[in-house]
Amino acid sequence: MSDFFTLPFFTQLVMSALGSIGFAMIYRVAGKYLPLAALGGVLTFAVYYTVEFFGLGVFAAATFSSAFSALFSEIFAKIKRAPVSIFLLPCSIPIVPGSGLYYTIANFIAKDFAAAWHYLGVTLGIGLGIACGIVVVPVLWHLIFGAITYLGKRKKKAE
Image (cartoon, rainbow, N blue to C red):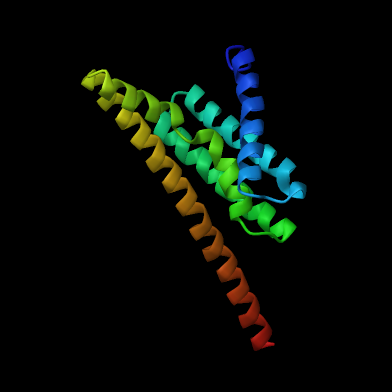
């Protein structure tokens, strides 16, 4: 467990916060939401790092971390009465596979096709995991709260 809390891990957490704040500023998120964007980015990366650390792979890490990001965004959008996207986009930035895209293209240019196809597969796996996590959570969120609302209206009507 001592390998988990390393200096690179804490450095990546700080960079996740800064990256999330930077992209939130690019997306013109109001200043009062920037701390939540940073917190969401840090926690999203922490979930990604934890899942990958325990050996579940990059697809699972991307899926769980993006699902967490979507859940975090839904909860704080409800609490702050704000759109979900102002939290979801900045919170998801730390798990975007930028290095995978870079290494894919760099290896294609260098004509190292075996490495290029490897990085392309990893990058697509992360992208698919992000998409799965971001799609599943809002669907479940709206199904659950829609059912609760429906049952509440039905109960009031019966009384």
